[in-house]
Image 1 (cartoon, protein in one colour):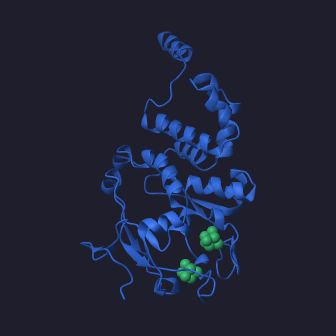
Image 2 (tube, rainbow, N blue to C red):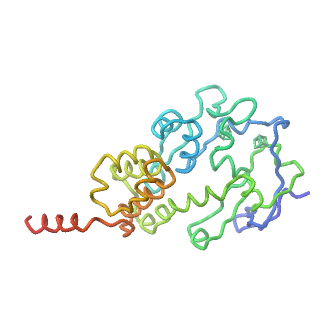
Image 3 (cartoon, protein in one colour):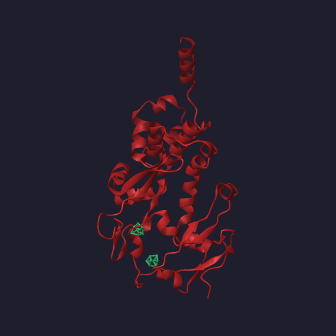
Length: 267
Ligand code: SF4
Ligand code: SF4
């Protein structure tokens, strides 16, 4: 029996479309159970961090400090990775012999496995999604008999809300701006890190600085942002679109524009 259907691409990779299927069944009687939760690189999305820090009942700052390391990616923007424990097996901080202690809120990459996205900017912009199967030799789940389509798997694993949230940040990372230049400015990197990953700090920035005196904001949204992380995240992404891409998704108050013009006149 084949392990999966799909199309062989030019690179020789078996590429799966949403309707294609693959064999996979992960369960706790397999001898590889939790082996994949050791010595692995798990990139965290902004939505992963909202889910996990809420599940743990800690602030974004505490979570980032205790559980993550930050790298700078190809675009020059910060990327957050889950920090494995400093033990012999480099265990994930959330793994136990009984499984994942944050299972309901586990990261996107733990959910989507064994699929991995095979997208490019072109397929992404066309709204097409392709996947391949990760080749992990010790993973017994790939030899089980259960067959599932890509769409079924994503639904079963609660992926749609993660994709919806990821679209907001992709408006920035997929921008043409980054095909020609890499961010090297530390202040911009810091601004991006705060808006994407350290939402509790971004909340303080909005409410404890002059921010709300500068920008036109809808009072209902402002009220929600005080306690609703998703509302705050949506706003943070707009702020990045405004600040990084120059999109007119936020508006300065007329009196602020007038004062700036006056300032320029007297320079
Ligand atoms: S079947 Fe694969 S995913 Fe499941 S525990 Fe084993 S190695 Fe991990
Ligand atoms: S977060 Fe959970 S599922 Fe993901 S590697 Fe850690 S223990 Fe495993």
